[in-house]
Image: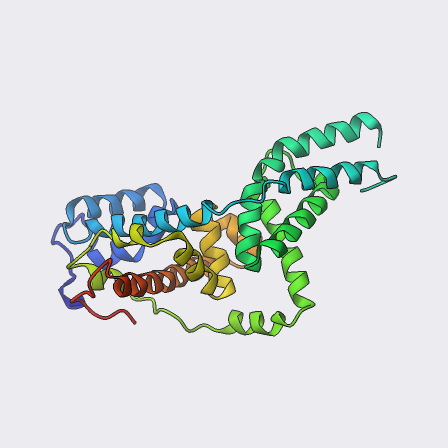
Length: 94
Length: 200
């Protein structure tokens, strides 16, 4: 099935494989402006690759949601504040 | 140090470092895999951070700086425990998903769920479990990027590895995690096993 992935024929268009290879860097905002533009152009125009962006985003959303929903112990902030106050109280904490 | 300087330091620390307490706790939890140990890690992290607050350059990446301290505290503790050998083994283990530009999980669901809607059906607990099952080096990179949104350069500095290594860990870690979540989604019937190539 991978053999079917070829350039769309547009001289200005990067091939599918090239766009897919850097999809993570693209979503992470790690590509320079020109490369990001080329990748965006490919995903906008390529019907096959386009859903891949949503796929990667759906994965990230799920991971982010799960980790961020974990409860931080309610008294942790107070404990840390108390430790810092205690450190200040010592003769020379530094 | 005068009382006024101490008060100033404290205010600066409270304004710049303490807002990251939740993020540091989440990071500590993923590193240690245990709420009690995570709480200890957070307390030691902030105490150490406060102790070296004088060396911190105001207005720079406070979150990354706290993560670095947290990870160092964690690694020092691990070095003293049995898990050290295990972690070293994980770090030299270069096996894992290959570098094929086509994501094999995506290739599998392309015909049935190309936008990966199945990810949204998976319960938080299962996702957390899957993250915690990742090798340490992949898990850290994935959490720092996917959850905390740190740039590659900051992650590289934090982990003391080249940017290329961060990219490779993220690439492999994400693929491995996606594969585990996909297998679970198939098992639960959230997505039917694709007609595409079986992910390896």
